[in-house]
Length: 88
Image 1 (spheres, rainbow, N blue to C red):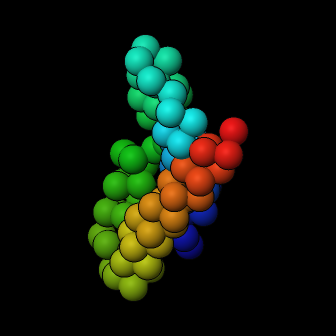
Image 2: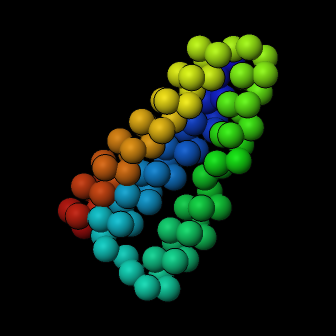
Image 3: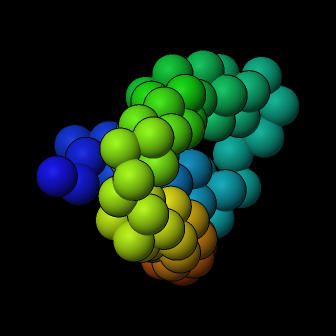
């Protein structure tokens, strides 16, 4: 089964990071929000572990789709968030 919760959390975190970047949040506030909030909210270690477990269980196609999908959706979410942030 695909780890949908981890995928969703990482994509939402990427969207928020893009939004804050688009708003041009800087300095200590950027450090707090981007590194602290977004970094704490997203789950790269869980993503990595989930991918490893899928590979260990020989679910190579699912692992590849999960890895590729998470990265591509994350990038798309950053772009969308950035564009929305520039509107604020």
